[in-house]
Figure 1 (cartoon, rainbow, N blue to C red):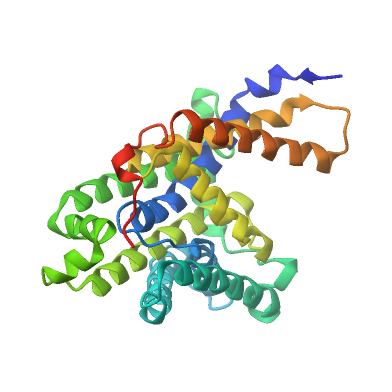
Figure 2: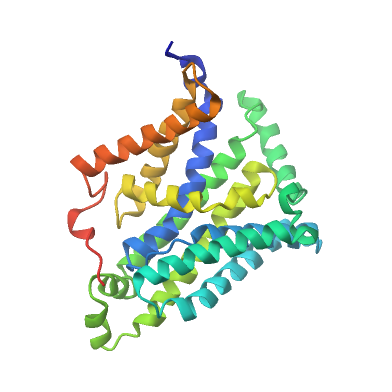
Length: 318
């Protein structure tokens, strides 16, 4: 018999949890938006950059004894370097081959993390990298006790995640309207024409990929803080495909749409947990994703450009 538990759906815990994971996916998808929506580079390796950033941060803190706050910028630079290294050979390939290479890259990163047990902990996971964050979070929670929110232990992470999302979006929007951003859009619409005008299109695409890698790494830090451990299974290719679902929902070439798409997607995914069906757990989980798929099909049928997208942004160049 079908039943819906509304109490859990209306609780503050539920919405804070949805907000945190939606913020992580929104930051993750900002990089995809920069690559796919504004440059025309179909990047399927974003989960790999996310894993590189998160594991570099974790290894620097746990194995090398770095401060958490120093490890964050260092790991971001490592992820950007990885973006440049994978982009140098792969961006010379045709778009479909580039997509295949980036999927393979993400899987190589994940399997490397799984097998480098001495550094990453393998499938057992890597713990103990978030002590500095926990200290700051507890201080903030003590302050929140004064307003009756001291029990919401994820609230500091929610505030920081969405604060970072707003700052990054505020940086990317004017950057996209700058001459640099206009060259990216020209590449997306007709790379040959942009090259004929004297633009080094390869260099611009490489820059776009490196910035997307940095955004993936930042999303990785927040995912790691949300989980409190690092495990290779957290960086499966499914993460990237859900990131693309966020783009489809929010709309191509819209940074604000990314945030909206992430919130809608994760509200839908998490809200369906409260539909009580007389089925095994794995079948219920499959049905939840089928429901999300149905919503995406309906969106494609009635508003293919997404909620905030435009139809003329849907056609990518060669």
